[in-house]
Length: 457
Image (cartoon, rainbow, N blue to C red):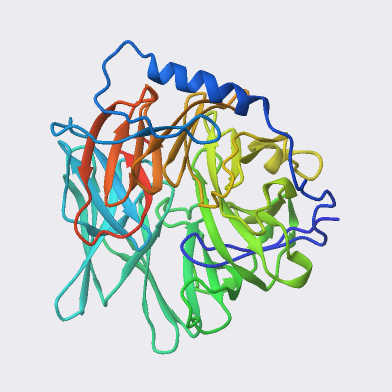
């Protein structure tokens, strides 16, 4: 028996659960996939026997268990990276132009991949300036000044408005700004974090009718990353009142649930108006399994149970959308990947279940969180120093390389070139092991959460 639960925070903590965990126990020694043995030989031979000269000198370091080869000693003359935006986990953005990263600003990248919304605060903290900047040419499209020291947290699907937060007298002040003026301001006695706007608008066509927020129910923990109690509310932008969200699959039901947990990773589907966030249960009846919280921007929430083979109750994982946002893939540090069809989540006749789950790679002892990206029919997995190109149709590894960095985030170009961020830089690497671009990140830039190619969503 499954129940849908309200949940979320894409930036910090959260969780939701189910009445009962899946009954199938994870196998203690899953069978070796057919890929593991073939990659051992085919990947090494394809990399080592490539006719094109590599821009990267390789060594004879021992391959990993699934055929990885070590790539080291990049050349002194490295081509520039493509234009991109890199976002840190603490809300900073740096833009690469002609291969060099600019001074970071505080802000966010909209879902269109073409717009940056940034904030700058006056020296006396009395005014915050919000700017909408086109990433293609760095032209500031709009600018508005707001009272107070505010931080931009979320924007609507059309980039018309942005939700900002500031410290209130007893809790949080939430401000919503349009491109030319302030539209909404209200103070609350509790700590709130905006999550995303409804994609239904008022008659003016500018203001969304609702803003999804996470309401924290206990003080910030002393330990960074510790779980917190919370619930999800929908802020009515007409009157500022907080209401209950609806069940994503049954709009006749509202959802009122207090939860404990912490966020793992998230991915936004602009096409479907959905935000997927991976969480781990912490309460006694949730121990040992994880779930994907689904937030629908037409006021709905639902949680997807995950197969225990992924062991995401103990291991880190990641999410990625593929096939034009029609498929959702969930990957675990143990090499298992499961796939959901997005339409089943919204419109399926029964409770949504994965269409397949299988072990795609083996890396004994590597429990680092994977980073995921997709392009066309290929998935890219970065895990510690390993990069794996995976055929999405068959969930088989086609190429694996070991790079000299601790991978934090990845992106994938249409031609198969991987962009990997970590160890204070971003590298562009072809499946054959060529380094075709690289640049250091700005000094002091935080852990990378996302790489956005300029002009892509």
